[in-house]
Length: 222
Image 1 (cartoon, one colour):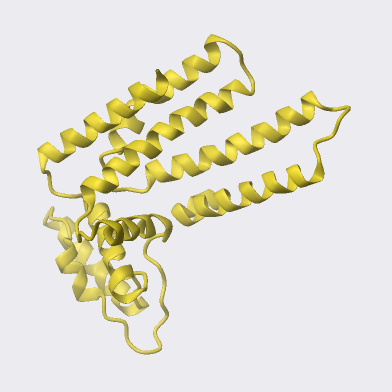
Image 2 (cartoon, rainbow, N blue to C red):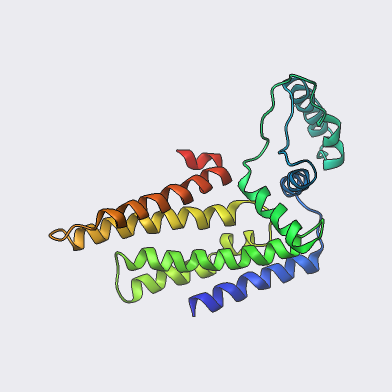
């Protein structure tokens, strides 16, 4: 029931976003731009300090006029002089997901497919909430946790946005589930320790998904 309701709600939001045909947010355009850059040049968005300062001055002037910078305007600052320091404007994991979708679908604008993928990922997150809660509670408590995750407005709404939140939440919940699984099982089998290979496999899985979470949102490093 949790799976079906969560998926239907998220697919409904995807349909609503598609019908609205609203302009993308600047952050969404940025992710798409980086994904196209990965496909065309095999590189992430990068800028030199000089152009970064110029961009900040332009954005300051635009804020005074109460207008936003568009992706077309940002191309003015994409040139990187030889030998200039390069840095990523966004963490790479989410743009990689979008670029992979572009390659698989053959479309330069795979927003609908990305939203459907996020609906599935978001639904999986709800099941992970249920599984984490199941390590501590029996009966209705774990069901309440799953149902709250399924209908939580913020999680449902973000399914339709081409932003990294849905993917990040899923990766973080995988980490939490592995941690709770290890801790709870150790308490249950205090007299019979968990085999070393099982512990190593769990730690490896935690490291991989934790690393992926950091590469989705740098704040996850904390």
